[in-house]
Image 1: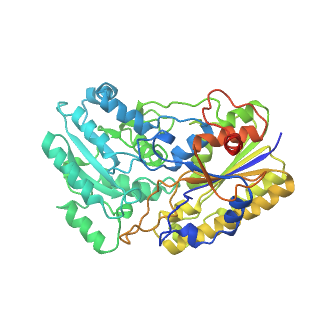
Image 2 (image 1 turned 90 degrees about the vertical axis):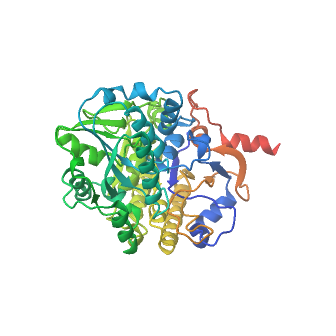
Image 3 (image 1 turned 45 degrees about the vertical axis):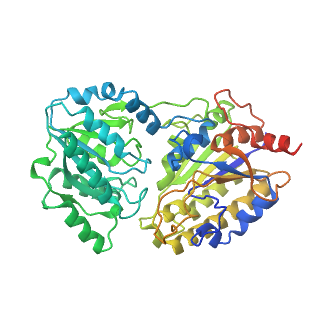
Length: 490
């Protein structure tokens, strides 16, 4: 059996076009360039239907790690919800909320980014509540990360017009996602969002006035300060709340705050084990890469800093919270943001942990290298170049030890980001891309350059199991990329 070290670089896409603001190309990545030349290297699709998302939708870290770890296409939550809307099953799903007679507050990201939520879902919820004969208040969270940095008013106008048309719902508050959707344990941010929704201390006359004022001060959607416009919309202890984001990781802190206040809470999907009523329950995946390795009584370690820890554990393991037998987890705290001020983040400590696990002869080591994505989301081109350089250097250190210890280093990414930092109009781009991602297997004869044979992220786990001489379970529908490459040469 061969031992494998898998590195998932977050936000590292391959842009085949030469563009002005490609932080990966600008960083002159010596190690990634060399490894992609001397070893079998492929391009993988990481967005849209190939990873269980709607057609042409950009990938994300949750979907990427879930797909990599499970080795199959899984209909993501957004697809499940979209399907229920199309078949009109959504009204039945929402029946616990519709039958609840309490004043209802809807809280979620007002966005069409499709990473955490979708504005079309909010519209469908409001349609279902149209004849519920109760007050419905909407507390908006501004995006600016999976959408353009100052695009909130577009979504605000859209939902305002929709509400006027169906005569259901009132828009009462807004705050940026950096406050309401913190996932790093900074409850001081979470509490600012909660306080705005509960107390609404400073009531304003106009959303547009306050937001345009913040734009003029250089504050983008992600960091919008709290705005509250309707006194009656404050959340009271006896009120019910529905959180309509479908992605759980950035909802856990704020939901836990409202549960502790004794509010009746509903969540679109399973955020964490709690008393909340879940509308779309969790779909666990069996026979993931981690489970197969565990079943063979092999040891494994999953490593990440805080920002991506859920991805190398919960998502990579098929939405399973608990580690498998003989699975070790290493959680390294991320530095406080903004990450453009510390572009290497906690990469040195993550790399050191990877190296220690290889030295300890752990059978399977996997880690997430977060900087290209997290720094890319800040919109700082120069800082993202530094993040990419640091990541490439870390890859070099891991590769050298893998070669010395007889490990096969496998490198891939969950989605693109750092390779497009500005669009054609020179506007800053903070969101993910739809570019293909690298898949480098550091053993055997090189391909000379990245080969595009039509593979996707589902093919990573089956390829790794073949390298480790382990049987691929029938649940995995992905293919062994190396076999396909050899057959393609004949």
